[in-house]
Image (tube, rainbow, N blue to C red; front, side, top):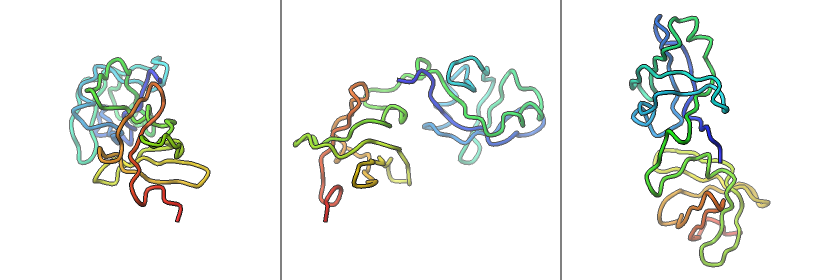
Length: 169
């Protein structure tokens, strides 16, 4: 499992004092505000110390100690922000999207394999697993009625197949 996980992307500078606007790729501003540091690389070499975080529309505004003016903030435009996994404990039953991608999807009863998770999207009601197989791409809601077990360490997701999910006709 990856040690550093993406939490968002810097979209632009905000104001003249070095704040940046963030497109969130995590659960929300509260999750982001819990970090003392975020990173610009997946090795932890480019560390930024979080000074403040606040909500702004569908994203966030962050002030880092190391960024003091608009020019330095603009230089970060388009860069992904990462957190250290050990700084982001999850509640039981919750998973990072990065840990779901690549998991095999199997039928909980028959053990038939349906494919591999290639992505996770959210269109409002729930997260949607994108499952890729030799038969194409299938979309499966990540809801308790369908997804019965997730074992990211063993790299599988067990589902209860329902009419229409994987019907071939």
